[in-house]
Length: 150
Image (cartoon, rainbow, N blue to C red; front, side, top):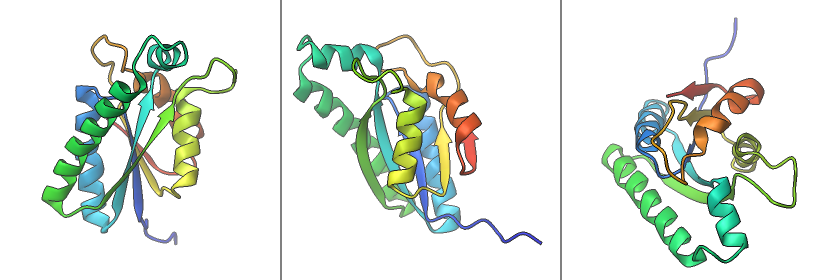
């Protein structure tokens, strides 16, 4: 007989999209059910990473946008009494061929010792921030943790 699922940390990658808000809501519900916390990782897409690296995008503006979105996540989690931690990850690299949004998510899962992942899979609206639908299939294939794809 297998042991019941124990969840202490739920990882939810976000990219600022409406689909990310839905994923946060699911992650909070799971965390609430298991008495867990959530870790929000804001994954920067290719256009944003290239803009930062070429100085065509303001690094501080990108950081501010990510912080604002994490505040939204924290607000949702606070209503349920769920603790939130956060980080930011480059989903692409101009210097590392193996850097992919999915690998960035799985690397973060390892770093925060996540027991469960919630990732948006629905195609999001067009924009430079939508990166997670590209990561979802990779995460579903290679994650060692249970994954809920929203």
